[in-house]
Amino acid sequence: MNEKLTNYLNSVFAPYDGVKSVTELKADLLSDLQERFRELKAEGKDDETAFEMTVDSIGDIEQTVREVANLSRSLERQVVTNFSGGNLANSDFAGVKAHKGQFKGSALRGSDFAGADLTGSSFAGSDVREANFDGANLTDCTFSALDLTNASFNKSILVRTNFSKSGLDGAKFTGVRLTDVALSTTDLRKTIFEGCLFDGVDFKYSDLSGQRLDGQTFIGVKFDRAGLNGVSFKGATFKNVSFQGGSFSKKYYRAIKTVCFDGATMDKLTFALLKGMEANLSKVTVI
Image (cartoon, rainbow, N blue to C red; front, side, top):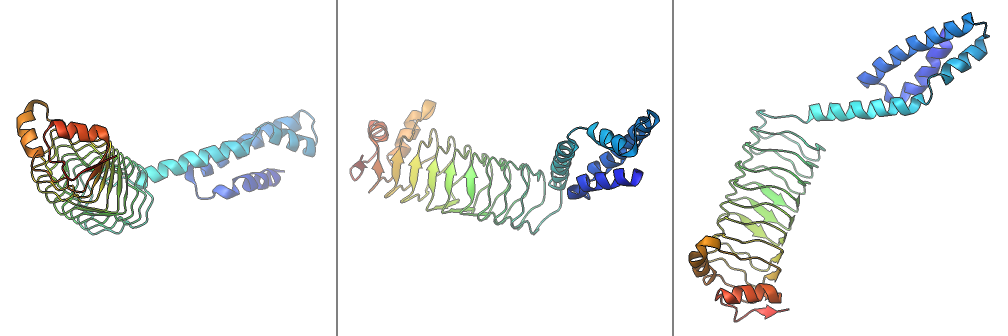
């Protein structure tokens, strides 16, 4: 009968072979079932009745095993994706799935993350120069205060991604929709933006002087107190965009007058705001 109990548990645990915590649970459970079976036999129950009562005594064991296995696998994934402080230059992470991965303070120069799902991961303090994030899911990722020189973000998924205070010289964002992305207090003069849609992006205190952002779309974007000297927005689209100078209003207003809005399309509120700052809007279409 012990063999019958063992076979029963083997069938229940079969889908979870190799999961350490489940294997330990199986061993403990077998010992408990054998003890329960002996007690029922001592009470005068026949083998079949004792077996059925023993199995019934543990309830819905399959659900319990499934929950333990899922938790164990989740914890194992968390361990696998902790690469903080690692020397990982030129590593191949293309296509990996690493939710909430930890890459803090790591050497990742030239590493390939193309097509990876890195949702919720942190790269704070890392050297990520020349890294490839093309097509990667970077939702809720932290890239603040690190070096991203010449990194590539072609068609990446950027939602609530934090790039504030990072080095983005030569970094290239192409064909990207940036949603609620933080790009504040950042030098963006040499960052490349091509074919992008900026939705809720915060550029506050950042330096965009000399940037060419022609033909791109800006929705709910904040350029408050940003450096805008000589920026070109030719043919761009603006909806509910904020330009506020704060205590640096005079300097900010002077910068606004150097911005090129030729051929741009904007909503009435954005137009009125810029008109009050004496921006050159003679070639702007109001919608």
